[in-house]
Length: 258
Image (cartoon, rainbow, N blue to C red; front, side, top):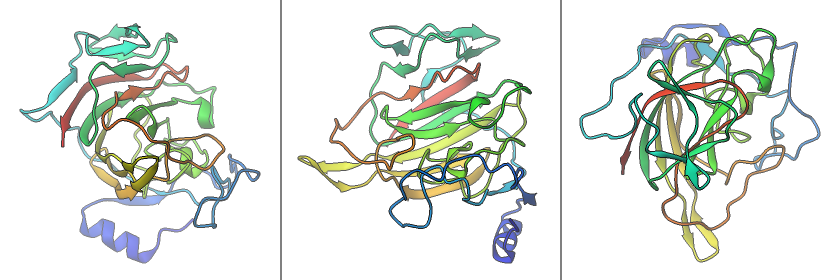
């Protein structure tokens, strides 16, 4: 698809270089038999949903002085896998998915600012959702997708920085495999009154220094091939990193309760 003149102008004003739409529009991975999202225009993981334009991201960021450090490269002490300590591999100051299962923080969080640095492996034989797949789950249920989305077409609401199954990022700020990337996530937890959600969760995501979601209301807990919905839960729950079978690495993870 072509980038609109308005978007080009806005990105240029922000100092962001736009260099065309991302990926092939011919492959069209995704589905046409899934339910429609509430606005009615697109299906969940719709194969016809336009790909976000790609932008060239900036440099990685350092943690602030008041951060609660969840991973500094030396220990998995802040993480667990079920009732056991986390067993992901420690390699070169990073932790790597190794097939032992998803991991969650021992601490619980509600409203939070979260910084995560991640790297996808080079997997030339794989494509779409099979390539560099992982995810950051806020409160263990609201996912910001991790994927190798550099020249790797997939359905728009499943690419890197998507609020999985709900909203694609506004632009694709992905770097190539084996490059370190950043998420800075600002999350406001949903508010419940007994069994009813009275305020949806709100998510802002900055991917590699580029704003890709701004105070976006979530439809509910992440689902695959289904429309998300809410179920009541505690005010604070652990953060989770997904083991999806790809050797994704993470480093420099910190959080600030808001």
